[in-house]
Each structure stands twice: as structure tokens, then as C-alpha cells.
Amino acid sequence: MGSKQDRQQIAAVIEQYRRGFATVDIEELKAIWDRDYDNIIYIAQEAAQPLRGWARIEQYYQSVAESLERVRTMTLSDLSVDESNSLP
Image (cartoon, rainbow, N blue to C red; front, side, top):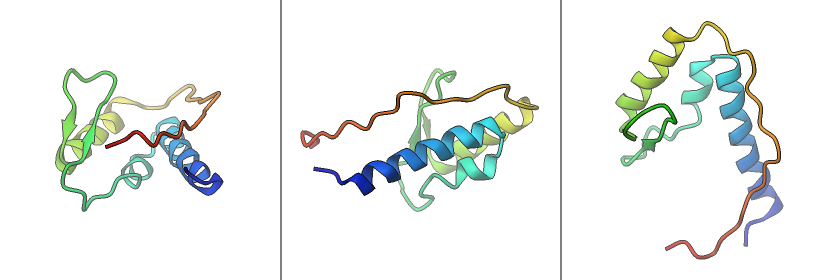
């Protein structure tokens, strides 16, 4: 079972994601990811296919930076972290 600290750390990463998009801070968004992880996948809501690999994710964030001047609002509410021990 996860600890309170685990839940706080997960919430902090989600807040970093929100803040990165809210301020169009691509470096903050990229800092979320482990660049050494070989099987990195990001599923952007607006993309037809998952983005696989660090280079593709970096390209995606660059295109976000180029296409957005600002974000009116980026909010999260009612965040809960569901703990499950049923993962393989």
C-alpha cells in the first residue's frame, strides 16, 4: 500500500504537468520525464497515435511551444490517487 508521501509525490508531478502547460513552459514539462527510460510513451489527447521515444516526445513539446502563445486556463480539480496492488 502506498504511503501519504507517495500520494503527495504523484500529486506534485501532476501539478508540475498542469503548471507546465498553463505557462507553456516546455522545459518544465520535459523535466517530468526520465530521459534514460527506454520505453517512454506519451499519449497526447489530440494525437491519433501514442508518441514513442524521447525524441518524438521532445518534438511534440516543441510543436506545442510553437503553436501556443498562452493558455487561458489549465486547472485540475478533485484529484485522487487510487492505489492498486493488482498491477502485474
